[in-house]
Length: 293
Ligand code: GLU
Image (cartoon, rainbow, N blue to C red; front, side, top):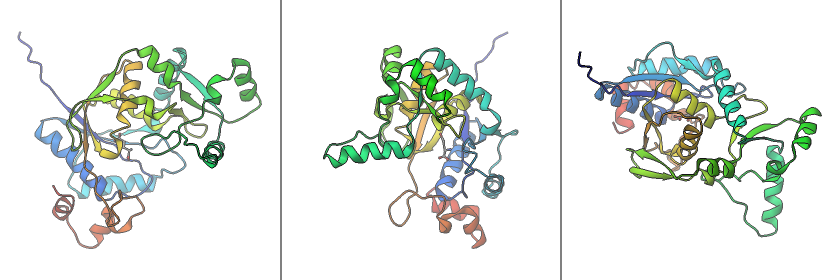
């Protein structure tokens, strides 16, 4: 019998329940849903709740309420990151076995102090594409014995990717296919701009970067549609996908909805919150118009 290979694109909207959804989320969710419908694809929802301290069941319930109000429907069960810590752990173990991971002991304020000292000398500290300082080199060069003794004495630590080593091991340039509102086509990826990215924290068993690539693979996502604010992070995702032998989705980074101050909307921005708009009597057609769809 002749089998016809049907391309079945899989899309996802992946909000974090650490605040209420606003117009920026509405654009992302509607775009994912519309593209899935046009492509005869699937639309999945993923709750990105690895940050157990900031994510709450109330915000999660509000996500379902707001998306249903927008008229969206998604497959069940919904994937919740907090139920898959073992999968992220397995990915971290695999990178550790490849000798690409090290325990990182500097706290955020240690790094801040280091950067301030350097900048006080009039020197520049290298920063990642989001403007955050790159993690200092110190921990990368510690001996095994020193690491064990620090861990043994209870010093809190995260795990970071040794970026230079990972790139050496990969040994070839990386890129991704982009169809979004910014640069398009075959985009060269430069993960080194992010330095030794964090893979798990002392207070969260996985990082955004690690869990997003594991989840996209496990959910069989073929089309990642998300805001242009994550365009540069895609370089890290492509590197992790290659190191972990995970498939490569096609990416579509869409324009952002900006507030009156010209900045990206934040979750505390009440006036653009979907619940607030609903309470003012707006309907989903108004939301589509407001986000330019
Ligand atoms: N959870 C991320 C956010 O709410 C989105 C991650 C992604 O789409 O890759 O901004």
